[in-house]
Figure 1 (cartoon, one colour):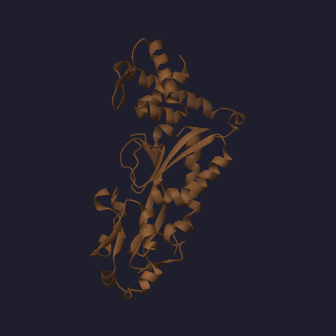
Figure 2: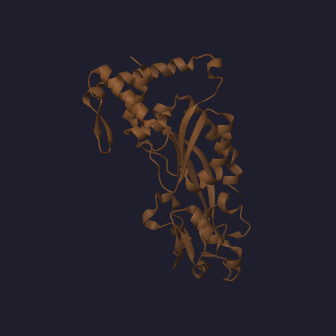
Figure 3: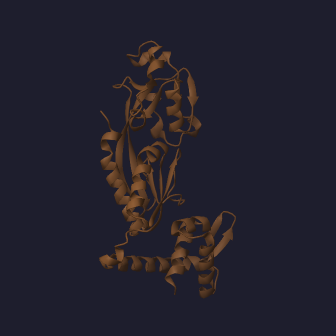
Amino acid sequence: MDWDNLRYFLELARSGTLAAAARRTGVEHTTVARRIQALEKQMGAPLFAREAAGHRLTEAGRHLLPAAEAMEAAVHGVERFAPASAASSGPSGLVRVGATEGFGTLILAQHLARLTQQHPHLSIDLLALPRMLHLSRREADIVISLERPKRGSVIVTRLADYTLYLYGQREALARRPLVSQPEDLRHHAFVSYVDDLLFTKELQFLDQLHQPERFALRSTSITAQYEAVRAGAGLAVLPAFLADRDPTLARVLPQAARFTRTFWMSMPLDNKHQARMQAVWGFLKDVGQQEGVRLRPG
């Protein structure tokens, strides 16, 4: 039996759609479809039911799944004992990394660009989005989130802590009464997230500090919030790695308005033996350590 056909079968079974399976294997969706058709012809039975939402395993497919997974484990075992020369070309293929918008854009993008220069056969999709990405839906291969996954067969590690402060534009602050205690914040408008579109409770800050009388602007995007504060719209809690680089901004109540959050990194357990996943996972762990001072400034 052709292992390549089984490999595409496993990816489609796990991802549920031809497009996702193609993305994970680095081929066109027509290639995945052709491989599945060849395997179904060999097995003499349909392995997937084609539905509007994607592909669902048939009874024959469910029976084949454990045998295909066992063959996958055997292949990975052989790969681990391959001579060093066989791996000299480095990791290859596509890895999709999901991260929060600010961290993905300002921290990860430059590092991941360097990684692809070191490994020319490796490709990265960086999803820097203001929402939660789900491993269970195969939206990404590796996800960096603000909440530790509590369910599923996943590997999880604490990537890094980061610090946030309350910021305002210096000129706008100078035109307002001095802020020396939380009660003085009543004189200021605020910039924040849209409450009913907040994708994690870890981004709720103001409840601990002050209940604003007015929000000048709210956005799902931390970059948009940052730009609004720069324009003098109001005060906002921003990551220090984003706001400290801007000389037009100043911290407000840096002792009282200081928050710490954690980036958690996770990937499906069945990805851990893939060379490209191991390379990106280890690289991102190193990035978390290297960026410690930038993420947690004093």
